[in-house]
Image (cartoon, rainbow, N blue to C red; front, top):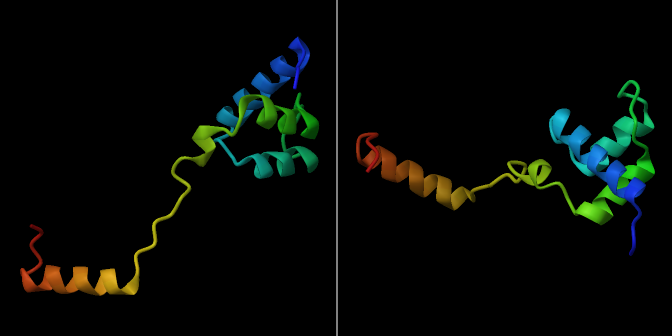
Length: 90
């Protein structure tokens, strides 16, 4: 896929905007633009999708959003281990 200078510059603007407003996911950013929640927004939905194609996913918006869920077995074992040692961590 070939992109011209204008498309690349708008892709960079999208990424700057995404970083400034707190690194929302791409879908959230599309919703903000579609609903006009960002006043005087210079980018469009198509610019956001194009930025995803040109630059790939925004790493900053992906970091820290994956939750780790521990199984019930792990929680009960950790609790037993802590209480057995009088609440002191080893």
